[in-house]
Image (tube, rainbow, N blue to C red; front, side, top):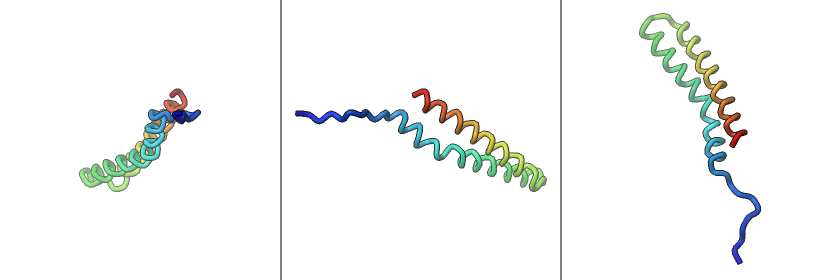
Amino acid sequence: MIFKPSWKINYRKVALLSSLGLILPSSIAVGLFFGYLLDKLFHTHPWLLLTFTLLGTASGFYNLIRGLNKIKDV
């Protein structure tokens, strides 16, 4: 007799869920990095850092919402 569980693991959903935890912090980090780099290049401290941090945060939330909607559809 072979044991068959009544539930089945959806590995695609597990993979999408595990990536959601990194979407927001990585987007903010990329915005911080490019803002800092451009501030050093153009001597506009702190304006480009703030601008790109806000853009990275907005991008992170947008991608987080897209990822949550994608999980809902799976």
